[in-house]
Image (cartoon, rainbow, N blue to C red; front, side, top):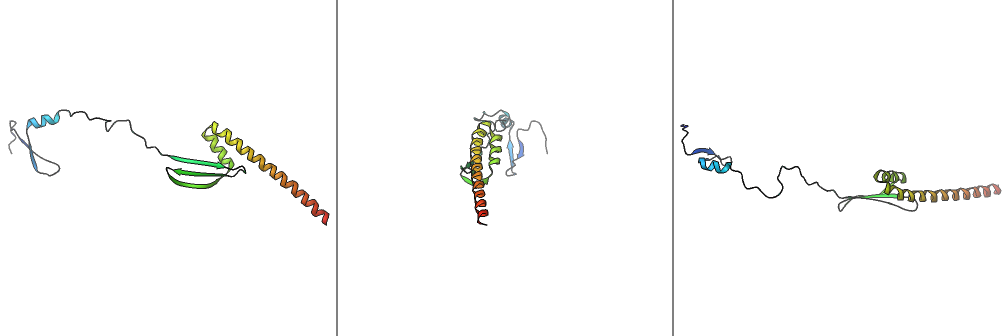
Length: 137
């Protein structure tokens, strides 16, 4: 093995094939020069695109105070027709935003007062039925 400094070629092996490859000092100088800058964002830059997840939560209620929730991930239904309490809907709306909580609480209060009126009506009807039953004895 002769390690003379004035040797014009240096044998090297390529990692792909393992075969010897000869390079000249001029070829290594060309490789050391910076390459032409590539267009676009560099691979290691801090700016990254975030993956956007599109999920839709629909909460619907009736005048009776019955609430249900549906969840859709993109175009796929995850859950449909899940029963939800009015209290849970009110808490969720308050947790999300005050502008959402106001109108939802109004709907819940209207349904609650309608239910209370129905309970009062049924209690009055029950009292009448009890009186009628007592008169028959």
